[in-house]
Length: 240
Image 1 (spheres, rainbow, N blue to C red):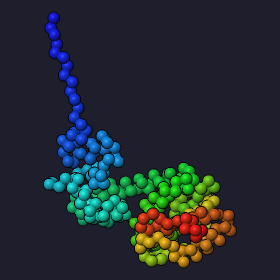
Image 2 (image 1 turned 90 degrees about the vertical axis):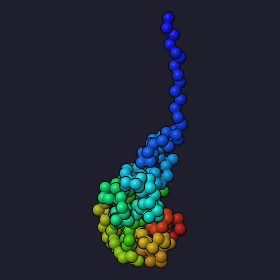
Image 3 (image 1 turned 120 degrees about the vertical axis):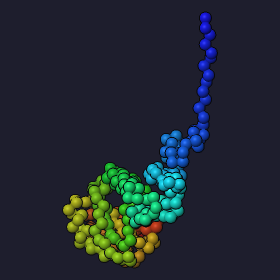
């Protein structure tokens, strides 16, 4: 009888060793699959989107250079098409990929707010408004129109202004609320300066909007000011 040798147990190398043995351009993808997206650095996440680097300049190096130039994800996503124009290795394909990611994030937040009462997702409201208005270089005034259950019908920018101010007309907001059959609204405007503290004019405009919309039984739930950091809520500030 022939005796076969006992099978040899093959031990798998640790995940970290496998990743370390990969070429630099493949590591972020493999690390994500092995450890999850949260384990990746900002540069590694960006490298996955960029996909390729340049001769002598691996994609991770390109990703780090881009983030350093832009000052991180927040600045990068404010206006990727403009901020990356002329950066070597960041052609139209890579810039459009970043724009697509930004739009996907906007739509995901919008769907969340359309599925349930907006104030059940207060952080989603703030994140959505930052994605929509953080990159604006001039002041604008927008309105979130809500149904009877305070679900999002639409977010519309109704007035555009200058670097320092915009003029909003309550009559036009009333007309649009009637057209959309809205039951409530959230007012929104941005401060390109980055400051989110309401001005006396902001408070005055809010009161005028409340009075005008009350005539058609539409309630103003809040007024957000978008700037640097989290949007400020007039309700939270006790001004509404």
